[in-house]
Image (tube, rainbow, N blue to C red; front, side):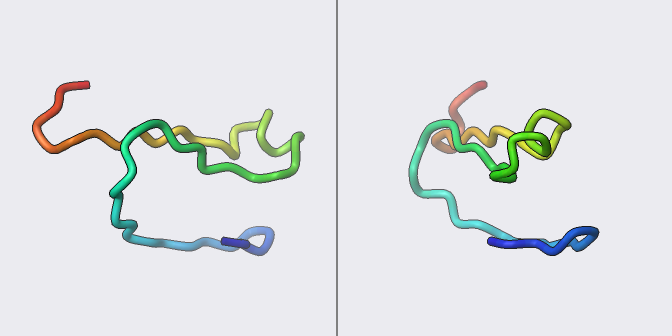
Length: 48
């Protein structure tokens, strides 16, 4: 999903693949300045 500079986007994903997933910008400088998050998908009821 591409987001324009200064833009915002909201989404409600359906998570069906367990594991760690990276949400990030493909510009290395942006990734190093915080435009990257790791989202973990677990089975319902599974503890962190």
